Length: 114
Length: 116
Image (cartoon, rainbow over all chains, first blue to last red):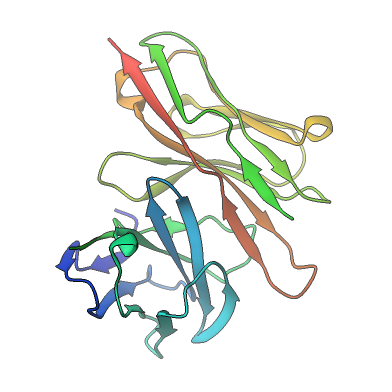
């Protein structure tokens, strides 16, 4: 058990809808990362937060947004969903978000857009 | 641009055989280097990491990796593969900021199949 909790584990929705994925980082970790994993794109970095502030942004679509709350949990909001958004979304956490730290991954949220 | 390349998408080996998974990176300096493993239905777990010093690093589950600066490579090895090693393996690099932003980049992964 990595200590990172992601909910829900599975999500099935329709095109055009909006969903929220939730992540609770490992106790004591201040930084949260979001990744999208699909068969054709591999593991794509979306966004990183540190202590409530956005630290780095990757290949995140404008339809997607995220935030980290004062209790350090994070939410990834996906709107106007398209079929191509179907993927496994991972959250990871680390202590301070520096590049020499290992990441602790949650088990992911499998999103299916029908 | 910074990148991580894992040239082998799939690898199949027999149980007991040796294994080498390749990883090359593109970056102006030596990054922080990592190997992660993802078992089916699970998140990624760190196998080992390299920051500096001895270029041969030992990790969990009997894995080791060697950093070769001249080749910009960080290949993962195991002398004798077990059936439980079947998983997907990701190479990753952590980059210190040149423009104020840390980066943590993953390769596309290598899926390992182990034959009994």
